[in-house]
Every structure is written in structure tokens, then in C-alpha cells.
Length: 116
Image (cartoon, rainbow, N blue to C red):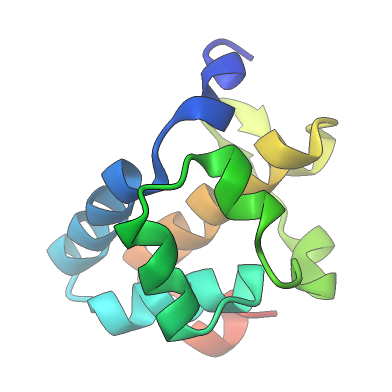
């Protein structure tokens, strides 16, 4: 898994606008992106905004997440050529779960199905 070693230090605030852009290109909304992120991490909208404002890296973002959703293990599929369910490092797996959820949102999947 090339570049996975960099994930902990990448600033969430730099990736978040890319998630929103990807979703908006496919006629989805920032609110839907936020819903998906909050579902996965347990953040409130205000808590998510605080993480963005303080420019947390992914390591901090996931370490401070109130609660990773218990159904996150139901997220399956390939992101960046790797099956997310086979990733052993919890931080990298959570980051890839988030990537997968944003991909599903951008592909038009219903929120009810994304938030298993």
C-alpha cells in the first residue's frame, strides 16, 4: 500500500474540500458529505467544524473522533487498489473507509445505504 505511511500526517482540513468538490461534481451536497463523515466518526457538525478549523491531521482527527460507527466494518470494496476490509492499520482503514463512503456518495448511492 504505497503512500499509506503518509496518511497520519495529512491534514484533514486539506482533504475535506476535495471530498466536498468530488460530491458536488456529482450533484451531491456539502451537507451530505458532513452527514457521512459524522456518521462514521461520531462528530457533531460543530465538532467536525472544529477539527477543520484547528487543521488536525488524520491521526488526530480519528484519535479525537467521539466514536467510530460500529457498522463501519460493513464497509467493503476497493479504494486506491486496496480492499478496505483487509487493511490492518486501524487509522489507515478508517481513512480508507471515509474515502469509500465519499466515493459511494459521489456515485449516487442513497444516504440510507451509505450509512449502513
